[in-house]
Length: 171
Image (cartoon, rainbow, N blue to C red; front, side, top):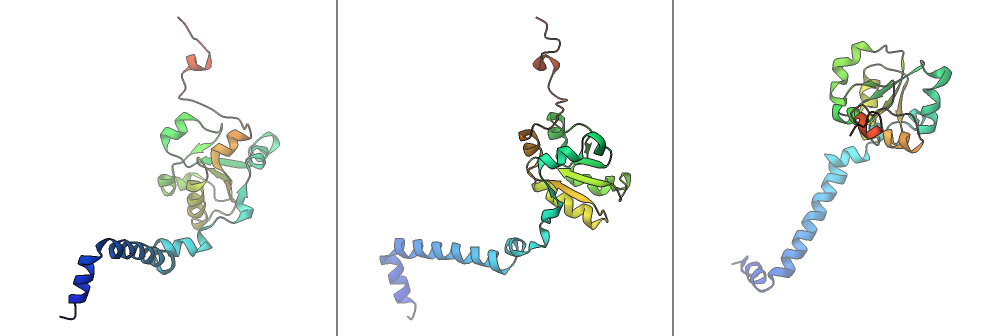
């Protein structure tokens, strides 16, 4: 009997109540996620961020990996294999993000590393992995290979057939 008024209200005003109810339910779930935990705790936790001093602009990274400095820094591509086959920075070592732990023994922990991916998301994750594994001088190419291309850094395109590049086009 106490719930009859709710039932009557729902039957006479279904659209208004349901619309507001759904709207507020979505807001409530969003606030729980944002403030309470899950994705929200990740969002507010800044310990996941790469420190600004560990970020290199493409211009700086190009200078650090060319000329006299060429052997002082190791460029590591953390993208997937198919991305690396499409385009890569010459001389970079390819270690996909998921395979870092398996390939870590092949890298000297005192080596200066510059990590890159496409735009910087995966290299940020890789940065945290390398730092947790004891690497001290780890840098992230800010903006990834996209930024490198904008600065006109050298590139290799191993999967582009030679006829596209104009070498050996026979007809």
